[in-house]
Image (cartoon, rainbow, N blue to C red; front, side, top):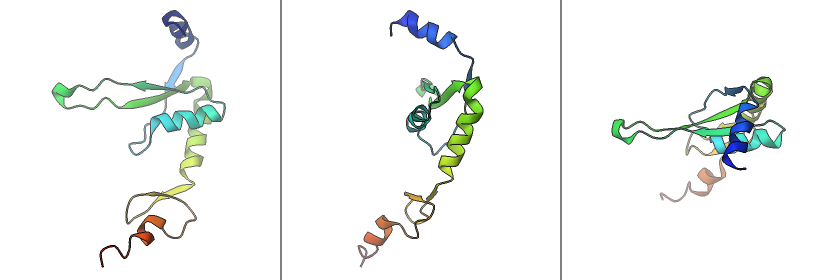
Length: 108
């Protein structure tokens, strides 16, 4: 896409910013949405190092797909949980973290 085509593409839609998840990865989330037919893009903000502010990234989707995108992300997030011991991501029905169980004897 050349710059003019890119601007035309952006102008075709009314973009809506999805709520950000501090622990989430916007690139992976946008890819997940794209794999489910949602037109998603990542907008990166330039960090302002002078003020020690990080730029961060946002996921934007066409307004007509925003509710579907929010529902997909909510449903996907509900399938996982965080290990209380190490912080790894586990499927909701996993009873124990393989990382924690493999390293439980490392301190001894």
